[in-house]
Image 1 (cartoon, rainbow, N blue to C red):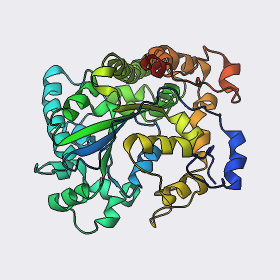
Image 2 (image 1 turned 120 degrees about the vertical axis):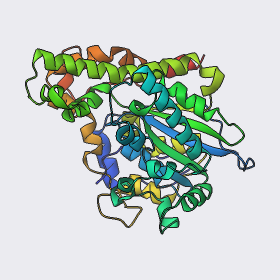
Image 3 (image 1 turned 45 degrees about the vertical axis):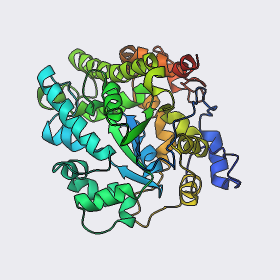
Length: 390
């Protein structure tokens, strides 16, 4: 059973399934968001320019579900975290900021890799190995385009598969962007060769309290003595400080990117950028999916509609690959019952600027408010988007 509220787009004349209507009372209602700006949609007449959509996000922010919204579309060439191998396997660091020398070297490899991908070139010798390593080819991360392009993967076969689709969509984690303002580096790559390709950005954000809570379970990917500070359920003062430092690192990346977009809105981002809160997607799945498709120039297809609304698997793969879980909606606010109010207060102190920009409501240490699930902890409107209207 799917636990998403579904408000059907006007152009989709279907009645909701009974179990979806029943689930509506269990989910925090969301209103349509302001600041929906018409995108610079891919033109069918401009066949020489390749269009790319970047889902920019953090881990534990709903990117698997959001990514599959595009992965499963027949007009999309989807890439699962193309920077993962470069950042984690080549540079052997998932989380910590690089020093200046390392960051400059990483920026070069980052730019070359994305340029080769965005142009549907796959010309560089290392591109295929870094973008589609063996672990990405497993059923768990199966991409829809592989069904129309079976057989061994080679630079030529992947290049042809890419060119056969209307759009390339790539999921990119913010921690894998060059420092300091990562979205600025995306802008540079996307603007580097306008005759060959262009980009749209969907910036996916989730309540930072939920994200930090989830990443704390993973010990922020830390190793050595620091990891041990996060293994105890009752954190020491040193452990709490470490949590706060990592929360600040994560949230400052997002807020710095948002402020950069705001400052440079009219220069490049207007029409190319869309900010989405994961809670709004889950709270109003059919409408927000249709909204994102409209932003990038795609149409809703029956198989994806049935996946979202009726829970029907769109692909004949193993059961868990593209299944929407009963927990997909309920676990959004799991941190509210899992985390001690003192720890939540620490999350809020570390992430206050981001929460204010995107419209998440503070509990300010109130255990009563934190545990009252009937009270949504997000605003109906996203404050940053209201600023962009002017």
